[in-house]
Image (cartoon, rainbow, N blue to C red):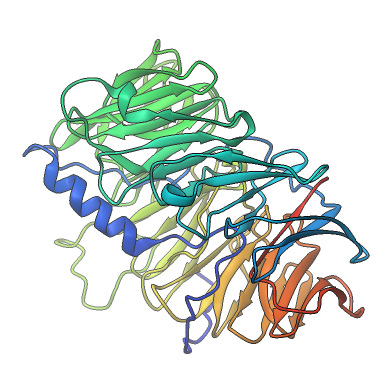
Length: 474
């Protein structure tokens, strides 16, 4: 706890939208309220100890880029090389351009109404658009995979979208039983992108889906983590819980009983770090079905003034997996702390109020940007726990694949900053490359490509405003 928190300041403009998306906490609260109301009495146990999308799926290395895809206000999409030269154009009514890791293609339509207008996959070679039908307007990418999840603001629908194969899977149909109730924000994808899992709340089950086969199987308990070909679930037993580790095929690896946990992270195919609300960190060996206490964080982490430790014992609110499972970020009312893969405390940073991730964690990030619901944000290096930089105002709109370069913007200007990077831009930031090397800035009469690692002049892409953009490989 030897780092001072940057002083709070003003303004958080929620208008911008590109890059890895900021979590929609308001929508999540609506969904959680709806699904919890529908759950039978007694199923009141909630585990919040991981990032929303688990360990991300697909190749988490920062992909290089060789083209920039830009959409104009009239819907025209143009593709430009690194010198700004236009190499392809396409006409579409779909709103929004996003890179989701598809080879030679980008996704169209996330900024519109997907249930009415559909989505599209733009081929960067010939300009063709393959249409995708989805049933719901809430659509997001699953971690670093090329998969999408679509859902309504209730727990009654859930679709897995596979753009590379132009198909969707109705996940609710795979649940079985009468009136299944699912939580779309529990969906996780494994590191191969081949397995997806999520919670079915009415029966307190985890549904594991083989993406290639389009089939599902159920495991007892709520989903905590998915990685290494393993599924970690939890079943409430009152003051304690059962933690079950299973193969994705359903075969059980091991079971242990522990105090209630609020955070957990698989570190290999038989071992997990678990953290209780009281700050007790343990290492669980499912092969031997053994629990080893690592550290008690209660004496080490700050709490709000006036807290009675004899009464207010819960100090850990949430945990997020980062840095390819070599770090877990823990959040409390007055701290952000980092554990290593052995469960040891790396560092804790004091904060003035409760913080949340400003960009949806994918599990691959070395760095994480945190802030309160609104106001200033701070970029932390998860490997060391050190503060990289802080932003007094503006909206965090995008992050590099490793999270260590972020773009912050308002309606007229922005900054791209992080490890060894600090570049102001003259327009609103509408895209940031996964490798953090470049950004697209948009003003009323121009859209420009900016190399953030040097002070060179921007490269003109358009003589008009860009509504969205994405970096991709052709």
